[in-house]
Length: 247
Image 1 (cartoon, rainbow, N blue to C red):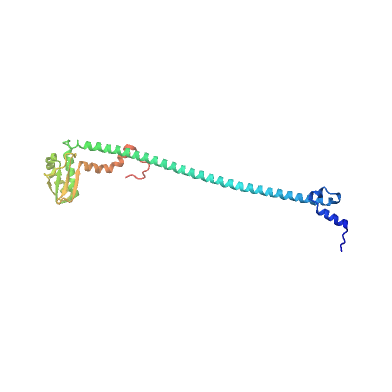
Image 2 (cartoon, rainbow, N blue to C red):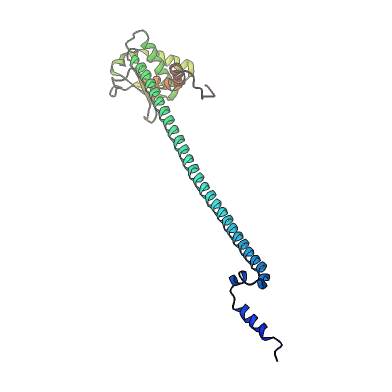
């Protein structure tokens, strides 16, 4: 049994068949639905705006992140390049400095060798000094004998010095006896002479020939040169600022 009147049923059917816009344009009896529809539209607009704002914020955040990451990559790239350039510059500067230092050392050594070579050339004039050379060769023989301290030694000299050597042997023997209290028999090797290329002096050999003492002018010059090279360097180039100790 239905308690709805026929007119009411017709109204319900009519209401169900209406579209939303029909409610807005409907009869004043349906104006109650207008606020509901307005609220729905407003809420939909709010949601749409909220989604747009959220999407824009996420986009900005992601964009900033990507920007910062790429900026960092660029900074790192140029930092590496700057370090490579700095290292290359230091290596280049160091190499050039080393090249300059080596060139300077070579030039200085060349000049030093020229000075020593000139001094050695001047040795050739020593044996021509009839007053000084006999004293020099006597001293060289005595030094060699005292170095060996052998009862018998063999002496070698230049062929042109053999008579001079013979003339000083007695004097050498006397001085040796006074200095060491020891006597040595000296035999001149007349079969093997020193080269005429040397400036003078002698060589002394033990009896078995196992020990040789060079007392030539060149050997003494070399020995002295090794000892005075620092002084020669200072005289030529001035004091070395990096040298802390001096003999």
